[in-house]
Structures are given as structure tokens and as C-alpha cells.
Image (cartoon, rainbow, N blue to C red):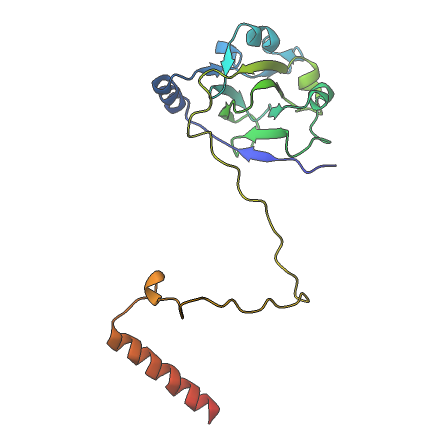
Length: 213
């Protein structure tokens, strides 16, 4: 089972709205005034989210705004199989993400903003109640067009791949020789006058001499 990627992202709605309006991108409030909710009394979604999505135009750089609570989840995936299964248990870390506001309490209000950064088909669903919410209508898919392309704030290179440090029994690497002599202390955070440097050297040799004898 692949590990699940959980992304904590709580956003103030009016701030996101103002930024989008100024840059020519659109914020789409999922479900309109109804929001992203599941009605436990009727065991159905609060609205038809597929119908809502069909009446929207989505472009790169837009945001989906989920006005919801901790009773629902927000899962984004690019994998049709994961979407159809209504669970992310066997999903890949590279194509399926869970957004939440960092709250774990029951029935706490949340506003979650999800950026549209991948062109083509994007899927969204709630896997709460062992996938029942998804099966009962808490799911929709959208087609994301290129539009204006990604804004600079979302068009950042991925972080470098993680490299495990060598183990304790690994062969020690040879020392690195720096051409041109020792690096200057002025290159780092440690810097001082000549007198201070001489004082530090005297203290160093004094301590070394006392330890030897």
C-alpha cells in the first residue's frame, strides 16, 4: 500500500479571491452557495457536484475553493482508477493528494483552496465514511485547459530528490582539496578583526597545551 500524501492547507477565502481577481485567474467555489457537504440524514451529497462542474470553465492557475467541514475530506487525483474506487488506500504519492485544514476535531468549519496546476482531467472526491460519501455523490471530475498558463507563484521547479546519507559503516570520503588555499572566514557568519583572531588562536593553543600536559 502506498503511503498517503496529506497536504495541510487552510486559506482565508477573501484573500484568495482578491489575489485571483487581480491576476486574471478564477476561484471556483465548489457547489456554489451549498458548499462541499454530505447530508447524513438523507445519506446523499448536498448537491449534484458533477452538474456544478459541468457549468464551469477551468484553467491552469485557477483555484477550487472548498467551503466545508472536517466531516468531509478533499481528495485530488489524476488517476481514474483511484477516483472510481472512492479510496486513496492504494493510490500513488505522485498522483493523489489529500487536502485538509490541519484540524482533526469533528464538524469544524474549513475553507480549503486547491490550485489547478495540471492540464487535463482532474478528479475530486471525499473518501469519508469508508468511501460512502464518494459513492453517494461527493465526487466530480473537471477538464483543466491551459488558459493563461500557471502564474509564477505556482510555476516553481520541484525540490531536488532526497538522497539518503551514507551509513556508519560506509567508507569515509577523502577530504576535499580547495584550490587557492583555505576559504576565508568572511564567507561565513564568523568574522572579526585581526586582534580578535589572534586572541582566539592564543586561547586555542592554550587549551590544547593544558590538555596535553
